[in-house]
Image (cartoon, rainbow, N blue to C red; front, side, top):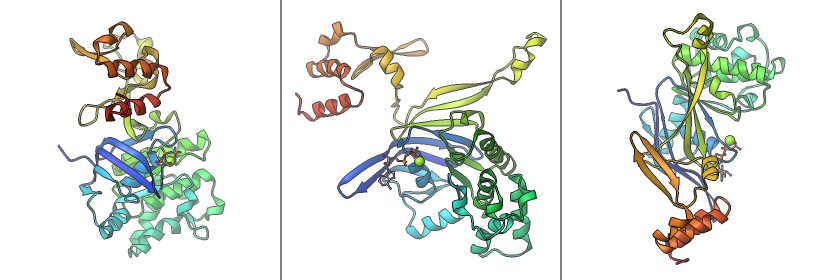
Length: 335
Ligand SMILES: Nc1ncnc2c1ncn2[C@@H]1O[C@H](COP(=O)(O)OP(=O)(O)OP(=O)(O)O)[C@@H](O)[C@H]1O
Ligand SMILES: [Mg+2]
């Protein structure tokens, strides 16, 4: 089996501002195969941009494992990480124009990173023209920034990001400032590049429809991989009547829970609330299933007293507070 393009195991990033530590990634797991087109979603502050910045070599991870195309991002020297960032990664930001030079036209903008890398000649112009063609902008190649729409500027920015033939393309909310019709043209550009160049692409998005435009969506919750949504084509049964033929093309989305490398998983908040799951739960295997059940109040006396109390207390406390309370208990403060 070929090695994945991206492999993160138990990835941790802690930002330190004076004496305050922010745990932005807390044991994130991610495997991306070569040539995948993937979406990343999650609430504001969940760690999406931090992950992109780590993968792009802009931010150093604190612990765990982060390998991209065989490069160990925890071990690369400063000189090597600069080279890695220049040669292996293309970035697209929410404001596409951020990477563009206003007094150059689209074609010259795409040529610029090649010139900066010391690559000159007729081939660079041809390469720039091919990239603009892939993002459907050949007809706008002589337009300057101010003569292009927001969506067009973003597509030029994508072509610029690809000028030096990176291995991965990282896009942080590339459609954040665009209407949904324009966003569609950006997704189409990513799909073309993924298909034609076999490029590995990660797109961070707040767009709930992103699953329709990529092969797989990872959801981050509190700096950890929580679940993945996979797009599947529904299979039409062999003997399905002709009127059901349309169903052959029907897509559906399946959300899968992610187990980390030591088997931990997150139970989604809506399930925890619906079943009153707090503190402790029962897990048993039945046939090919795992069943997770709350501990009913009448059975709590069978638990060690501190845990029984914790489980009962947890039900009364808002989500999050019980965890701190349990930690206190474990450290012995509450026993
Ligand atoms: N440079 C930094 N220094 C300190 N804390 C940071 C820094 N960058 C991000 N954080 C913190 O890390 C956490 C994750 O931030 P991040 O920007 O990765 O979230 P995000 O998922 O991209 O959010 P959004 O959807 O709002 O862009 C947040 O609590 C944020 O405040
Ligand atoms: Mg962000």
